[in-house]
Every structure is written in C-alpha cells, then in structure tokens.
Amino acid sequence: MPKANRKKYRKILVFSAIGIAVAGLTVYAVFFRNKEAPITVQTEKVARRNLTELVVATGKIQPVTFVKISPEVSGEIIELPVKEGQQVKKGELLLRIKPDTYIAFRNIAEASYQTALAQNTLAQANLTKAKLELKRYEDLFRDNLVSDSQYLEVKTNFEVAKASNESAKYQSDNARANLARAAEDLSKTTISSPLDGTISKLNSQLGERVVGTATYQGTEVMTISDLNDMEARVDIGEIDVVLIQVGQKARLEVDAFRDKKFNGAVSEIANTAKSSGAGSQQESTKFEVRIRISEKESFRPGMSITSEIETRTRTNVLTVPIQSVTTRMPKEADDKKVPGKTTAAAKTGAQTNEASQAHANTHAEAKTKDSSTHTPATGKKANEATKPIEVVFLVNTNAVKMAKVTRGISDDSYVEITDGLTEGQEVVSGGYKAINRELEDGKKVIVDNTKKNPDKDDKSGSNK
Image 1: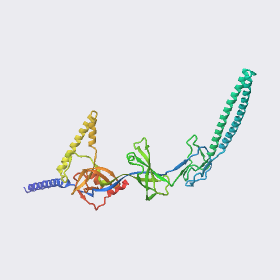
Image 2: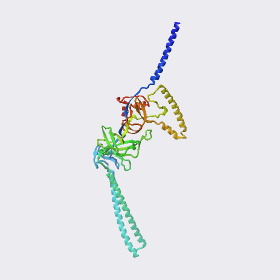
Image 3: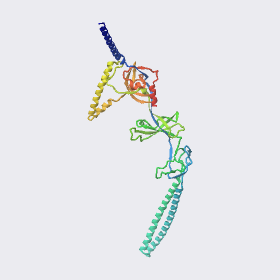
Image 4: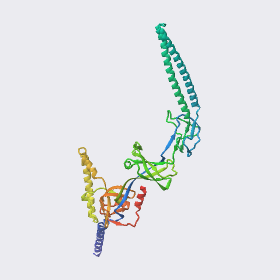
C-alpha cells in the first residue's frame, strides 16, 4: 500500500508540474509575449521656413562657341603647323592640302576661258561684217539691183552671225565661272582659323589624306573652341523640364574642382527630346538644357558636372524633414487600432479580420474582374482606393498617430506641407527604418533626440 501511495503521489506531482507549466506559458503568452517593445525614434517640430526647389542633373562642360574644321576639298595634308591645345588667332594657318591637282584644274579652266574670249571676239567681228553686208544689200535691193534670193541669203547670214555672237558670250561667261570655281577650289587647299581660340581636338596628322565636304560627309580634322566662355550641357527628364525656364539660377559642381562651387544661369532649353536606350525597357526621354557658367576657370571640354537648378521658391511655409513623409496603405474605419491598447485578443481579432479582409478582397477582385467589361468605372474606383497615401507620424505622449498630409515643393532637407499639419506639432524624423517600415498608427515609441540616426544619415548620403 505505501508503494501504491508513492506512485499516486508521484503522478500528482507530475501532473501538477505540467499544469503549472501550461499556466505559466499561457500567462507569458497573454501578458508578456504580446507586449511589443517600444520603438526608439527622433522627432522635430513642424516649423515655417523658406524653401527653394532644386532640379539636379548631370552632364558635360562644353564651350559656348566652337567650330569643327573639315576641308571642302579632298587631298593629302602637306602642312599642319598646329597641335592640340595650341592657341590660334583668327586668320592663322591651320593646314594646307596638296594643291597640285587643283592648280592643274585652274590652268585648264583659265585656258578654256581665254579660248572662249577669243571665240567671242571672232563672233563679234563676224557680226559686224554681216551687219555691213546686210546694209549694203538693203540699198541694192531697194534699187532693184539684186534679186530677192540674194537679199534673203545676206539677211540670213546676219541672223546666224548674231546668234553665234550671243552663243560666244554665254560660252565666255561659262568659262569665266569655271575659272572662278577652279580658283576657289585651289584657295580651299589652304585653311585658316575662323576665330580666336584653342585647338581643343586634333584628329588628323601630317601626310594623312582627308575627304572634302563637297560631295561627302568629310573628314573632321580638328575642333577650335573659345575656352573663355563655357557652359554646362545637362540632360533633364520630361517631368522636370517643364519647371525649367531661361534665366533660372544654378549651382554647379565640377568633378575636377571638388573644393569649389560655381554659379550659372539657364541660357537655353531644347525643344526636342533626345531618347536614350531606344528599344529597351529602360528607354528614357531627356531634354538638353544649357547653363552658362559665370566664373572663369581652366575648364576643359568634356569635364563631368553636376548642376542644381533653382526652379520654385516658397517663403514662410510649413515644413517637416523630408524623411518624415512616407506612404501607407489606407485603412478602413473598422480596422483602425486604439492607441496603447494592444492585446492578444485584439491581435487574434486583427488576424481574423486580415483573413476575412483577404477573402473579401479576393472576392471583390473576382467580382471587379468579372464586371470590368461592363462597368470600367467601377474597376477604376477600386484601383484608386488601393493607392497608398502620404502620411507623417505625430508623437502623442508615448505613442504615434498617423496623419495624412499633402506635400508641396521640397529642397534637400525639408518638404512643404500644404494640408494636414499645424505649426508646432511634433513629427517623427528618424530613424529611416522606423518611418518607412515599423511605425503604424498607435505604436509605442520612445523619443531620443540626443541619438544620431545612422539610418537617416545613410539615406541622405545615398541621395547625394
């Protein structure tokens, strides 16, 4: 009997221990596991500031004035007294093409012209002779001393001489034009600088044969640039180009001069877009914008540049840190949580609501898809309802409240809020992970403004 009592006593202890363990796990699950740890955030007050919106674009530095030198005649370069980087004056010799062939053409044209002049002189003499002969025969014909046939023959000879004289004149004019063209082609074998500038690019060498632009595209021998007047040529997307206007100020950073910033103004905006990556999924439409650089520096064509163009300005407007504004999906009224009241039952109910909502969404999507062929407007409204909204998180004691906002312009650090906030409210400004992922309406938070937010710094650094 004592042995049986010990076994019974042992069973009671085992089951009691199991019961206590189950009860402890239940208490832990209800009171501790479901208790969320507060999120550490940084905050900042809604304040009034002056904002200037910037459009950032990259491009290259190019001279405002530059000329690509291509010969108009073909041949071999026999003189090239310049080199890349050399400064030249207007009218200075740049290159000379072998002129032998063009001298021969000029001599042939000159001989043809002299022959035409001689033919013209002979035609004039024959015309004078025919004219005198006709006058004599007219007097004889009037006195009936010559027959009609003789008179008509002399008259016809005069008309022939007259036409020959006209032809000789045109032939001499043609020969003169051929001579002028041959002389011009000969003169084009010598090319001089059309402006004061610098040889910024030299593509050909002495002895190289070049093709003229008379009948072909021609060889680009060199480029002469005025490096005293430079501009930035940047590409701006079609969304931002509508904000750009001639005369707007710009700040410029040149990779070669990292410690200096330059000023400029928009001088020209392209009217026609240029597409990049045509035929691919990453095709983009860009417009070239030219910015005249105010400062003088030893710029070289082709240097990389980053520009910040000031487009719109707002004064004394409500602003929040730019990272404070994020997006969330809109919630139905029955899905809203009560701040500071998160229980296991609430979570279970939320999970049930999520499952029901998922089932309802699936049913709604099927219904919308089925009815889209009949009522397109219904489908459009359903799609619009699922768009995310822009929000900020307001700090209320130890919890946050999600507030829908309408944003205006922004600069590098702050964004204008046109609706949804009032001056002096405290908004969450960090960290980046908390704002973009973790925070929801009613979440518990701990404000720590003495702590630097590494996520924010990394994000802002990556934007730059």
